[in-house]
Image 1 (cartoon, one colour):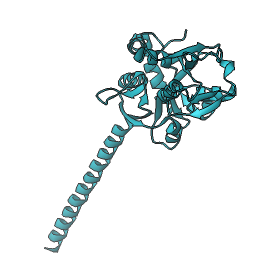
Image 2 (cartoon, helix red, strand yellow):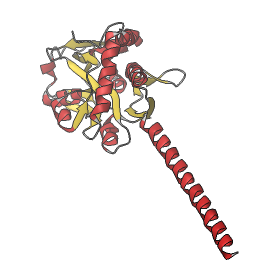
Image 3 (cartoon, one colour):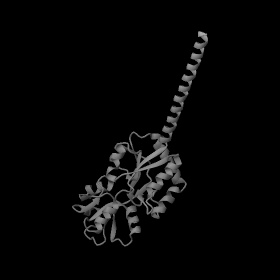
Length: 266
């Protein structure tokens, strides 16, 4: 009788342990599945206030050239996208802190940034222009800005250009704010890309501003990542960008926003 009871006890114990093991296995599988799902989400930092690249339309939907390019790339590589809107001058701090995987915000490629970050292949090519009021006759070239007040974001390539040329820089959050300061005669001008100027004139054709062209090297903008980012992910993004260029989708997105192809060098 004791042997029978002991046998039943051992059998019951084995069943319980097996059930617990299966439960743990199920939890592990669920956790792995959840982790895999998280890994397929691309968390992207962007301003959301920088038209026509990243901004909110009349229905308060996040849209723009950079947003369309990001969404197209994510679709190609099988990722979902989660956007985290951040002011430009806090953008790199957010990337460094791991708040997002990459930035999609017309980030210009320069030597200083390349030393600290990784970049994708470029998806925008633009020429720098100096935007001033229509009746400004004092500034005729880029070199005339020494001692003049220019409105710039401090951490942009154009902000650095203004400093390098001896301008007195007034900090702004973006291009539209710079335009407001120019039109109210509180600053003399601003450096930015020709695509930003052309879009502003398209939206506000009566704005009394003009663009002065220079001989600066054509700038390139790309997605930017920390040095810790997996090279395979960046490689996949570059392959997606190439495919979008080859099949004409990137040109289509560009012409939607600029009536021109800014995705290729000129």
